Length: 426
Ligand SMILES: [Zn+2]
Image 1 (cartoon, helix red, strand yellow):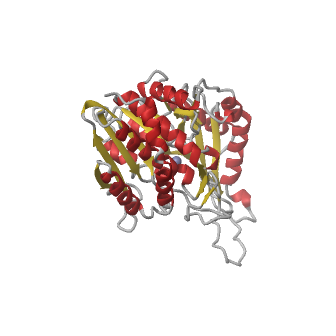
Image 2 (spheres, rainbow, N blue to C red; image 1 turned 90 degrees about the vertical axis):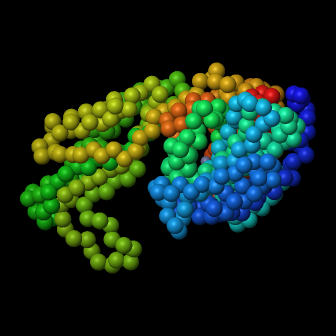
Image 3 (spheres, rainbow, N blue to C red; image 1 turned 30 degrees about the vertical axis):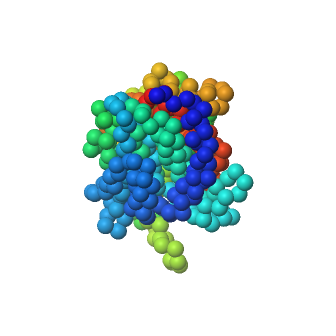
């Protein structure tokens, strides 16, 4: 009753055209986020497809989630197919939203043109190719092994590109990633077919504001410039904080190599008078800036504690305050995510590593993502630790003009995913 590896691989080979067509159909539905277009269409399309393959499908709106509105409702699909007997559930989760098109395209971003081994389009690599590969893998496996145990789930979820709160987070809060219901999760993000992504670094976003006092710009001594105070903060950051962060190295296998340390980006800076709308032809008014704000994006390591990450910033600000008369500041938390890294001995990691070795003839690389993705919600809200990202595509192409996915890469990833199902469900 156990399907042989060659049977499963033959089922994948027979579906090459189906994989290409499915990928193209998904690209042709422009699920742009923001604002969140055509989410219902893509969920309905996949639900119809999976229903024909024996899946029970739920199309769920994340009512009330950030971004959800009657104009742009946040739709999600959860499809489940029961096996012939009890066993584990393997869940493939892909986000169906894509980022804006941007400039620089030489092709129609939603025509899904095929040229040689490549399918072009916004979302081809991030991550409609991955969703298509998972669907084909699941269908091929079920055809080769109809009496398998457990269950297969496939979800297509909203808003990963904007935090995942109307997608995986919403489902996780409703128990969809409860370890009693789902035991293994694979997110087919474009990490390349020979790499297993175990998790991601942590994030802390905060806004730092320095305070001043407004006065006439011709008599700045009567006011207090919040911009000059911020200048002192930035200087202290260069002098103390950046060297401190550069010295913090992680044992996490983060790629690219440069992200294998703590990092800090200043996303924005704004002080004084608001910028005028384009087309305003007047001059600015002479004022001393009474406030200045920066938004920082601090990425931290599994070895770090978020409370200490915040204290470092407070200590830096207090050091400036001790030296500078009238210096006052405020720090506002905007967003934070804990780092996560699945154990290499976890069942889904071991099964995927073996499948990669069978299909590609060499063991996989293990990597950690510099930025977060939906695993954060599965880990924190769902409390499910047996989760990885594994899928076709070249990460660097994500969000770029002329984004594409390789058909051979999708085929290889589909082979790997089908063999993972065999190992976990047969
Ligand atoms: Zn993605």
